[in-house]
Amino acid sequence: MKAVLDTCVIYPTVMREMLLGAAKLGHFTPVWSARILEEWARAARKIGPDGEAQARAEIALTRSNWPNAIQPPALGLEQRLWLPDTADIHVLATAVASSADVIVTVNAKDFPKNILAEEGVERRDPDAFLLGFFLDDADGITEIAVNVLSEANRLSGAHWTMRALMKKARLPRLGKALSN
Image (cartoon, rainbow, N blue to C red; front, side):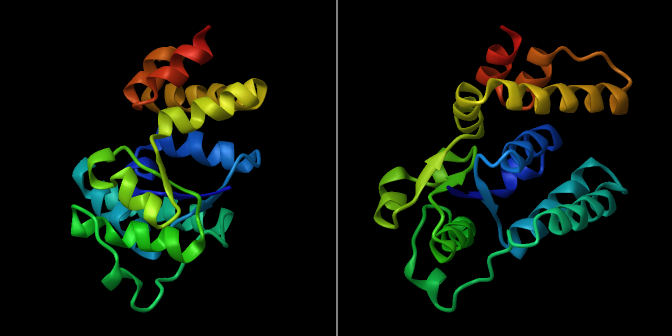
């Protein structure tokens, strides 16, 4: 299964690490565009003066780990597509051009399921997407989550619980499943 990862699911670190960890296990093939990665870099400016530089380093690492994930824009495709927020048309165009099965996003209102269905694409929120993988591969997803939790605790100097970290990362159902 190919999945386009929208900026809103790759910019938050915990969510990105969980998604890409699931991809490394072979649960799906990630796809994005150069524009999606650029949006990630620009969004990181909000965390402070070093945010964009850190994001660009993470983007370079992500690109090297997933060299085939970049989908170049298809000429003329964006002009024929429509979404409620025109700034998101490039995400749908990336999905169509790559023959992706799904767009993973938290922006449900910007990606109406009926419009996506016309293009043969489904919309999934990252929590449900990852929970599905957990149900099929609890050991693999748990291992990823334990590593993400350990790194979050190390970097923050805090002591996160699994459930609290996943809830903060907008993955509450996955966090509950991991904590049971």
